[in-house]
Image (tube, rainbow, N blue to C red; front, top):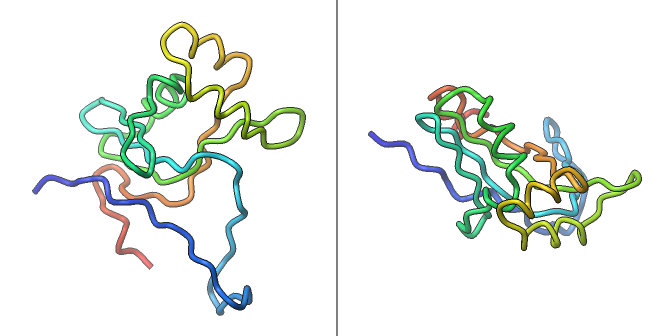
Amino acid sequence: MTWTLPEPMLSSPVPDPGLRPGWAPEPKWDGFRALVSVEAGQVVLRSRRGTELGRAFPEVVADAAQLPDATALDGELVVWEEGRLAFERLQDRLARRGAGAARAATEWPVHFVVFDPLRLSGTDTTLWP
């Protein structure tokens, strides 16, 4: 059976922000939602809508290549600048490819903040509590 990258889990508004026992909040990151997977040594970085993002963010692909094979993560791409999240830098990075993306990666590196491990070394974790 072939494992396929699931759709990202999206947040939904609630009338009361109180948390149920055993629940934990996640901060609102000012970035792009993304999924990364490593399969047979190949890294795929895509947006929540399925757009391939790896060519725009080569540093994220290079870092993900160090993950164990058969691993998939759900998270957010962000850029930090002077102690704050810089969404405008992230938008600028999205338009760059090749050498331009590599140069931009040194000036405004993108970080992948992981929300959920979806698969770890071949183990599907989506049904874990």
